[in-house]
Amino acid sequence: MILNKKYWENRYQNEDIAWDTGSITQPLKEYIDQISNKNLKILIPGAGNGHEFDYLVQQGFSNVWVIDIADSPIQKLQSKYPQFIDRIQLGDFFDHAFQYDIIIEQTFFCALDPEIRKTYVSKMYSLLFPNGKIVGLLFDFPLSQEGPPFGGSKAEYLSLFSEKFTIKKLEKAYNSIKPRAGRELFFIFEKK
Image 1 (tube, one colour):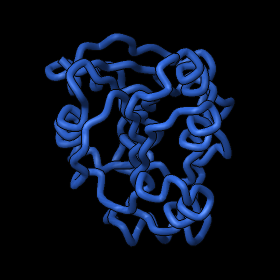
Image 2 (cartoon, rainbow, N blue to C red; image 1 turned 30 degrees about the vertical axis):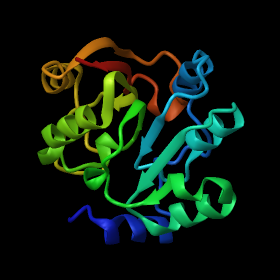
Image 3 (cartoon, rainbow, N blue to C red; image 1 turned 90 degrees about the vertical axis):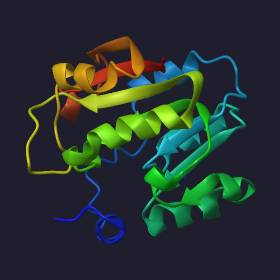
């Protein structure tokens, strides 16, 4: 299986998007609700249907960007938010070149081939301003060759991210949706 643009577009076309919860998840909502600076520059990679983007815009955040490799969700978001069309980008995250204060991680990391996880970490590092943060959820179940989603563990995440990031938080999410209860870690990693 090749996890490329065609693969993801087919998943959206066939509505085979089991990861889509239909709205922002509670851990991310609660984190966003604590942010007072609405001008922070925020990226949501692999944004899909953009539930986090919806919530940020509704809360008055003015500098939010999304990127996804699949056409369908990007077209829907651009139609829904024509005023933000330049910030809703079709493209490959690994080719993206701006910098951000916060990058929100929601089912993007676990959808990537595990072979490129170190590349993901380096790319995240390069996309963040000094002291910028990656915030979100990572799955906590055994890594397998079958996916997406591909699993992972707290020990693996510590090993992957610790060189370039200060681990501010990495703990079981207490407020996951029922199907993911006990299988998600909420994290905040700050660029060193």
